[in-house]
Image (cartoon, rainbow, N blue to C red; front, side, top):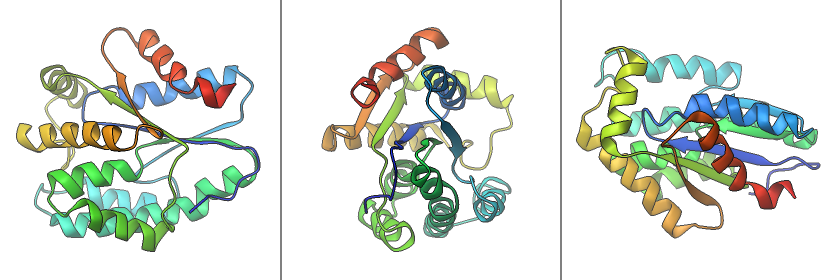
Length: 213
């Protein structure tokens, strides 16, 4: 699906736990606004009233509250509402949309690490969101050790039910993102998330240079 738009652009920011994604989402939004762009920062799961209600179901409770298949269905439902109620209207108004997580997180977390299967996740996305994809997906990457240390510091030992899964699960997520970037280099770019925040933001902007020109 090609999202209806005026002159807007749809960017998703992805990555595993502890890579600094939410911090960089805010910094990148500010940097794009400084360039005169009208930017909507949104997130998944969430970003619309219906999707925010589903977010609570997904992130709260015991780690085994949902099966991977049930999680995949809930994420797809939240995303469908988010695309229809928030993302597409913003693009139609000519705004840029920066989304903290989108389809590729479901592909990595539920599809690969959760073993639901990538094809199943994409089929759900086709049904719920007509296959809508970002113009560019930026994936923040850190070594497994650095990401785990950052995630622990961020969560102060109390991660949500998905972030609290074991190291094997999160290693599978990171490898899935690498594989997605290899298979779709025109859309998906891996970004080194090490170093200071300003340097990481500059790398993100560099990966958007063709869209900003």
